[in-house]
Image 1 (cartoon, rainbow, N blue to C red):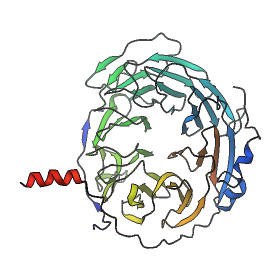
Image 2 (image 1 turned 180 degrees about the vertical axis):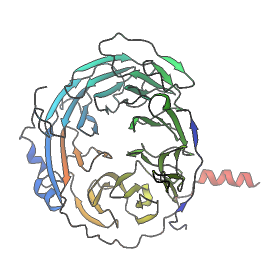
Image 3 (image 1 turned 180 degrees about the horizontal axis):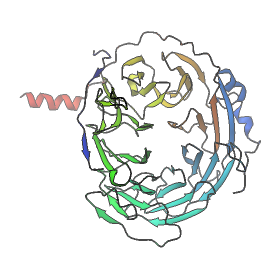
Image 4 (image 1 turned 30 degrees about the horizontal axis):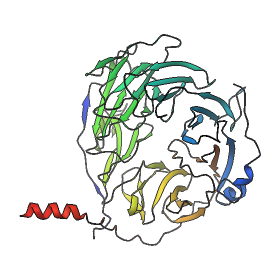
Amino acid sequence: MPSFWTVTRPLATAVIATAGLWTAPTQGQSGLCGTAADELVAARVGLDREWVVQVPFDSDAWRLVHVVVGDRLVVAQGGDGVLAAIRTDTRPGGPRRGTVAWSQRIGGTGTIEEAGIGEKTVIVARGHGVTAIVADSGRIAWEQRLAGVASAGGMAAGGMAAGGMVFVPLDGSGVDRLPEDIWGQPAFPARTSETAPVGESAERFVLDSKGEVDFRPLAYEDGVLWCSADGIITALVGMGERARRLEFDLGGPASGPPVVRGSDIFVATRAGDIVRLAHGPTGLTANAGIERLDARGQKVPAYVGWHTIVEAVPDGSPVVGGNTVVVSLGPWGIAGFDAANGEIRWHVPDVGRLLAITDTRVWSLDETGFLVARDLMSGGRRDRLCLGSFTIPVVNTVSERLVLASPRGLVVSLAPRRLLSATPVVPPPAADLPEPAADPAADEVGDADDT
C-alpha cells in the first residue's frame, strides 16, 4: 500500500502575448432550532449568525438551484429564473447587511448557470442568452444572444485586457466576449478570433478557450481567468499595450474551479496535483525561486509558486485561509497543506465535501449529511452539527463566512468570532491511503497485453 508522500517539483509553462428593501420574515425560523443556523448552536462553535433571509421566489413549485457568494452580494437563484441579491456589506444610504437588496427574473429557456458577481454587473447566462444586471439596483442593463449555448456561468471583469468586458464560455469551445457597457444598444454579432486579441476592448469576439470551459470564469488582477476541461488555465491581464494572454497547462483536468487569492491561483487536478500558480515576469508558473532587483538593487523573490503531488484523487476546489490550503481527496479523506511552500501539514481519513474556512476552522459536509468543523492547523475534528433543512452545499472560497441554504430558499450567513481560541486539536495518526479497488476490466486488458 502506498504511503501518503508528497513531492514538490517544477512544471513547464507556456506564455502567449497576453430597490426597495425586503427583509427576512420571522415565520419558519423555528426550523432553525438545533441546527447550525441556530444562534445558540452557532455561538457554541465560535460563530455569529450575521443574517437569515427567506429568498422571494416560488418555493412551492421550484427549488433554489445556485447560491453564489461575492464580495458585496450573495446571489440566490431559483429554478423559476428569479435571482435575489442579499447585501453583505453596509453602505451609507444603502440597504443594511442581510437584506434582499433586489430581485429580478431572467427569462429564456435552457439551463440557468451560476451568476457571476462583478464590481458593477451581475451576469447570468441561460441557454443561448446572457443578461447583465446592475449590481447596485437590480435593473436589467441589457440582454444579448450568445454565439452558442453557454457551458458555464459568465463573468464581468475590468482592466484594459478585459476592457470592462463580459466573458461567457460556450458549449464545445470558445469564450464569447462582450463589452460590459452596452447599455440599451441593439444586439450585434460576435467575430471569431483564433489569435484572441486582448487589446481591442471595444470589439466583440469569440476567444479561443483551448477547449470547452465548464467552470465560470473568475476575475483575476485587472482581467479574467478561466480553466478548460483539459486543464489549461488562461488569464488575460495587463493594461493597454502591456495586455497579455497567459497560459498554464496543468497536464490534466482540474478537480474543481481554481481559487484566486490576490495574484495567486490555487487549483487541484484529478491526477493528484495540488498547485499554487503565481503571475511572474514570464507568465503563470509554479516554479519557485525566480528573483528580481528591488529599488536598492537587492535580489528579492519576484513570486512564489509550488507543485505538490499526492497519491490520491482530489475532489472539488481547494479552500484557502490562514496560510493553509485544504483539499478534499474523495474516499482518501481530507488534507491540509502549507500555502507558502505546499508541504503537507495533516491528513485525516474522514470523507467530506469542503465548504469554507472561518478563522481557525475548516468546514465540510460529511457522508452522513452532518456539518463538520476541523482545526485548520491540525485537521482534528472540533464540532459536528446538524444541518436540518440546509441541504444545499454552498462552497465559499471568497470570504470567511459559512453560508447555509435550504431548497425552499432560506439562506443563512455565519461569521467567525475573532476571540475564538486557536489551540489546535491533534487528530489520531492517519492511516496510509488505501489503493483504489482494482478494475476487473482493466486487469483483463492488462492480461491480454501481456500475451
